[in-house]
Structures are given as structure tokens and as C-alpha cells.
Length: 372
Image (tube, rainbow, N blue to C red):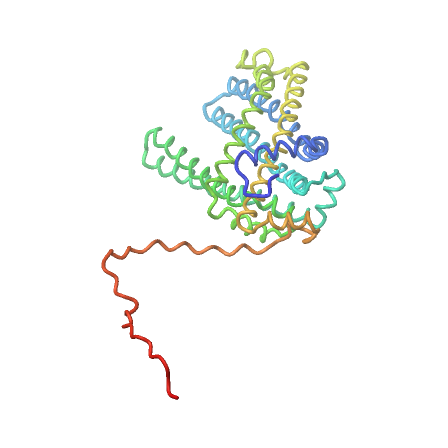
């Protein structure tokens, strides 16, 4: 990595270089931390959603009254939402744990070293519980934020129902609440994006690392958000391609060709359908493990770039590589003093005759001789 402020090409190229030169160790960390949970979440979600859909249609057929049908539909929809949102949310939390070892390995690659599995675990000594605390704090904040916007949505719906508004107003309320929640969560995620890399590299505590992330993103919010959005879109496209077999398997498991569950709803998914779902989930998980490592490395390099720009981290890294001092170049450091803005040029003085700066002395002939 060049010891200078990093551009987009440097960040992306550096992330792929980090992965290529230590792929075995990073993939092992990714599989142990996120791969197992992600595969289980995908299998359970796919099979459970298919079973819920089949049972809902069969229950609606046997429902005796409209109130029973409404209760069945509401319960099935709630379970479906919990599976569709809850399991991916848990998997996303585990990706937060993966970010710490990826950040440590990326920092070692910046110093020209190759970290081992045990070496990464040792470098995280004293910092693991801070990572755990931050991930749990994120989970609590996510649940709280979701609850707040859910209450707002229920309030909108209750108000519109009291006024007997049309369906369009209900749809507009849902869109407004969803957009508001998305904007707030995206803003917070960007401002605190460097918290775990800061914990892993600098050894700060939870709140100190969160404050450091807030400072590093100051003045660079849109750049950080843009690069994160670009990387997320690229890797989401790769995962969507890999998940195509899983989507095909979901079609067969959910009984789309028999939506009322008359033939396969009672017997459940077949053995081959389960096998295809498991294989598809493993393929998606493998691609997800690679993209998780690359995303974590990109985020770490963005944090290093901000420290280079605001704290002169490149100078400390160069001094460490030359003389060994400081012993830990990633340790917390004071921000560089902000340069005062240059004063604009003042109005030019008009051209005109300049006053003489000296007076011409009158020449006198020298006096020869002197007193005798």
C-alpha cells in the first residue's frame, strides 16, 4: 500500500491484494465466524418460508369464518417477516465480529507482514470484548430504532383509519416511514463505520472508538458513504448471481406450482428439494465469505486513509519501518493541526507616480589640503 492518501483504486486494489496474499487464513476466519451462521440462516429461512406459505393456504381453505382467516393470515405474515428480517439481521451482526480479524490482518499487510490465524487471535487480545460489546450495542440500537419507527407507523395507520382514508394514504405512510428509517440507519452506519477497525487497530474502548469513528468521518461523510455503497452494490450483485440456484430451489419448496398445498403442502418439501436448498445455501455462503472479507478490508483501508489525512499515519508507519519507532504505529495519536485558510489577495494599489525615496545630494568639489 502506498504511504500517502488513498484513492478509490488504491482502496479496492489493496483489499483484493490483502485477500489474495492471505486467503486461506481469512477464509477460515470468515467461515468460522459468519459462514456457519449464514448457511444455517439461509437453509432455515428458505425451508420455513416454504412451509409457512403452504400451511397458510391450506389453513385458509379450512378456515370457517373470515375472522379465523384474518388471524391465520396475520400470524403467517408476522412469522414470515421475522424469518425474512430477523435471520439476516443476526447474520449481519456476526459479520461485525468478522470485521475485527480482517482489520488486524489488513493492518499487518500495510506493515508488510503476513498474519497467521493464531497471530490474529493474539493481536486481538484485550480487544475482543470491546468488539462484542459494540456488536451487542449495535443490535440493541437496531431493535430500538426499529421499534421507534414501528410505533410511528402504527400511529400513522391508526390516524388514517380513524379518518377513513383511502389505501393510497396507508401506502404513502409506509413509504415515508420506511424511507425515514433507511435514511437514519444509513447515516448512523456511515458515521460509526470505523468503530470496529478502530478497536482492532488502536485498542480503544467502545465509546472512545465510536467517537474516533465520528471524528474520522467528519468532512468525509459522502466519500465514505459513496465508496461503501459502491462496494456493497458490487458484492450484492455477486451474491445474487450465486444465489440463483437457491432461488430456483425455493420455488419448488414453496410450492409455487401448487400454491394451495393440495399435493405437497401436507407432505412437506421433498428430499431432493432439501438437498438443492442446502447446496445452494453453501454456494451462497462461500461467495458471502469472500465478499465479507473484501468489505472488511475496504472499510479498514478507508479508516487508515482517514488517519493518514488527519493524523499523519503514513509518517509513523514509515518511521516504524525504518527505525522500529514507534513500536505500534496504529496506536492512538493526536490529530494534525488544521492549517489556517489562506488569506485572499487584497485589492491592488492603483498605478501612479511613486514618491521619491531619496533626495539627490548636491555635489561639491573636494577641498584639497588642510591645516598645516
